[in-house]
Image (cartoon, rainbow, N blue to C red):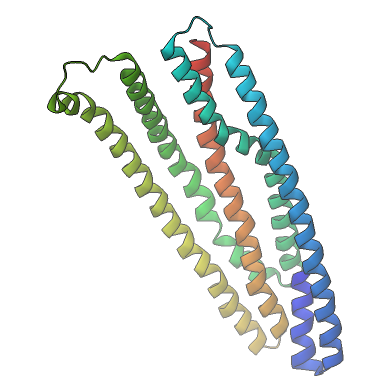
Length: 272
């Protein structure tokens, strides 16, 4: 709807010169903005309700596994795991709604572009392919480092809970805990490096898409085979296509991370 309205507004200005038509189409666009914003609010509110409900349920189930013998290490373990359920619960709320929404948006936008100008749509879509291939591959590496980092954080927590610090000076404490901290730091640095490298690659591909729309679309306009409004709508449409694609890739990364997180939480609970 917004892409078609943009196309018609530009064509009404360039070709027809009809300001009344421009105002009518602008009013229709304004109505769409209000409706779209309202739907997003409703969706976000209910996602929040689901997330909070899942977090509450996970915490109840974890606390039921607690051995009530007063073991301080057991209590610290439950506290740590209960805190980790925050991220997991938030993801559960998104895991169904977000893919359905973003896939629907992507399919409708690409379908519209394909219907209006197939050549431009296909060339623009081609710049998605490297991102779709690179992201899962690099995410597997991030997952491995993330799991190793969580393991070291938990090992550090267990060690702190278990150890008796009486009689140890500062140098001894530093020598004991430095390996834990250095390992955690090393894994985090590796994760940051890969994440930002992937972000740079995806951003570069994101700029090449609109450039291809402008170049190929401009060539078609010069040849008289398409309208200026179509190219303007396609530039906007590419951004509307990129946003859901980014969200889907982000959701995939979250899914991979939460799968690791859930596996570690479940293992800790089973060991109680």
